[in-house]
Amino acid sequence: MDRTRIRVFFKCSAPLIFWLCLLSTFFLGFFWQTSEGHWLNRGISILCETQSRLSRNKTDLLDNSPEIELPRMVYTKAHIFKPLRTDVLTVTPWFAPIVWEGSYNLDILNEQFRQKNMTVGLTIFAIKKYVVFLQRFLETAETYFMVGHRVKYYVFTDRPEAVPNVTVKDGREIVPLKVQNYSRWQEISMRRMEIISYFSKQRFINEVGFLVCVDVDMRFNDHVGVEILSELFDTIHPGFYASERKAFTYERRNNSKAFIPQDEGDFYYAGGFFGGTVDKVYQLTKKCHEAIMADKNRSMEAIWQEESHLNKYFVYHKPTKILSPEYLWDNNFGSPQFLKKKRFLAVPKNHAVIRNRRNSHLKC
Ligand code: 4GW
Ligand code: MN
Image (cartoon, rainbow, N blue to C red; front, side):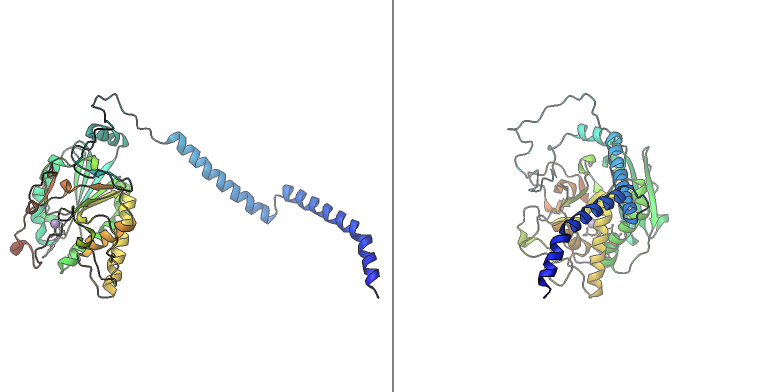
């Protein structure tokens, strides 16, 4: 019946509908532009404002970012066909430098760092009998570590009264920090991750630009300076610098958080010398501590404790700089040709006296 009627109706009213739509679009657009109070409009303007404030901050940064301008310096220039070291790898495939003697110009690096006006924090743990290492550690650090720069030695110990009174140069300071001791040595070693992450947030972030975290049973034997600093760095373990992956003593049990499969990993990194900017060290130590606790909850302990977790972390967070074994050597490994300097050396331990129980191994 009504099909024709309906068709006629639509035919007649089509232009009307068209004009109605056009008009409403126009009015909607008008109110969109003018009505300040509209909730959608308010939302949009807040968004725009935040955006412009953000980009204003970025622009401010452009104008106020500190400039590092070197003075006139005279030195032998680098030459494309004369690599500074031909016997060792000096850069990783992800373009992180590997620091070897002869591969850097310390004057340039020192000048750049000085202009940043930063302090370096060095963390060491001397718990229970390990306080005996402090004297020599601190004395040799004063001779070789970050000479000419500001340093804070953060000494974590259960016996602050046993921290020796070593005289330090201007701009340098020894800060004893009391921590509890743990009965198991593995716990002492692993809890360093928890303590460093906690103090990074509570204190280090406000006091230093970089953190260097090392073992205390060591002595400085040659220059260790700003050439080591970068966002995130670690040292190649002196026992594995030439090893194939399969020989790395990574955690191989796949139910541990530190598990690394046979076909992954770049280097075997030492747990006894790592560091970086405070934010990066915080992320690393926090994540390693969480992984250690997750293992603990399943009654697991990684084969080389925190060193295993550190190695796992570096598989997926590549270090931005790597220190050659010059920076962590043990004379038990001899004196190979490529090793031009032994900058930081393991102090032989009288295991019977200093330790409660630990099989002699080559973890650094
Ligand atoms: C076995 O009886 C022990 S005790 C193994 C480590 C112990 C220990 C370690 C300790 O009693 N007190 C202490 O402060 N530590 C800290 O952990 C100290 O900073 C030490 O350098 C670090 C790692 O232990 P380590 O140097 O003995 O480990 P390795 O032999 O792998 O360098
Ligand atoms: Mn050690």
